[in-house]
Image 1: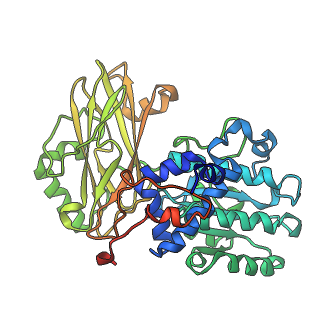
Image 2: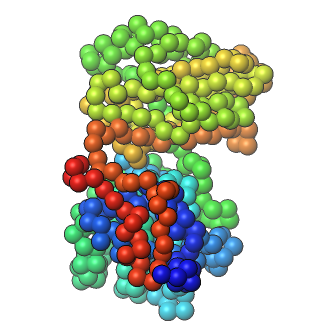
Image 3: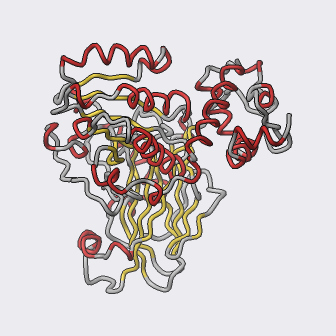
Length: 435
């Protein structure tokens, strides 16, 4: 197998990533139900596509500006499970052979951008079919979008919701179902404007779907970058449920009572019966530990996680912690301030019978306070300029007792040749004992 074949068929950057990141291989394996040959075919097909479309080099400047200006495709908001929403406004699509390649690259631009920004985080696709007709349906384009999730970006699709579909398109969507295949068919949801609210909250639905989201697409700049859409603040427990009261009492004994009862006082460091984070993100206002992931498991002792914020400035720093799943987590304190040089322990606990999910995310926001004591925190956050706010995101990691393993790839280089399968097989292995 010659290096020339390898260069001709794949982008060397993709090959290098495959060798260095076990998660990529595991994504393909789990999507193909651990049938190695199927996973190899899929890697081969997606890598060829990435080279053909130049996916690694697609940028905002390589896409025609009119594509962005139409507002036909964009990322904005979250569904009720915390998955990012990928909107397709079908009425703005017009079938045109001259522009189909640009449209395909445009979709690849958004997917690649999100995959880099939020690795491992699924998307929910929303086909908004209101006011659309047969002229708006381009079956080649629809098949391409499905292939993006079926082949090119494995495990990337949470669900695909078709909203307000005209009856005249029933036949077309029967064909689409056949393309999806059995593993993805369960992810396809048809919904009316009222039914869509079971999947997406009113705050992220446009008014024509009965929602309250004031968002209006415009370009430039690109919309909804880096948490520009608000996600829910999560404050103290307000329910009088007996189990919650007991929970509060127990946590109070841990020495956290002062931070529960007030979210607007400076919090002193407290001892917490939680795992000490091992990694730290060094921010210009706060150091955040852990650096990337909060870990939760199914056992009672694993239902709490600890975030430690350390003020590295000479001023008091206000902070707040937000989550995409406020119904599942209690964040205490969720909003307070931290003295210069001090640290604050924030306990994030799963509420009741809730289970953590890899889609759940947390956002730490911080800003220096100039006039300490002269204003309440709520007012401070309303007035602080956006460019003065430090933001840091944390993913949720779900601890699992056992799962199929993927062998490290760093010590076993893969020679990529024209067959695309035999050469990849050395990169993929799994433990049969775990199956």
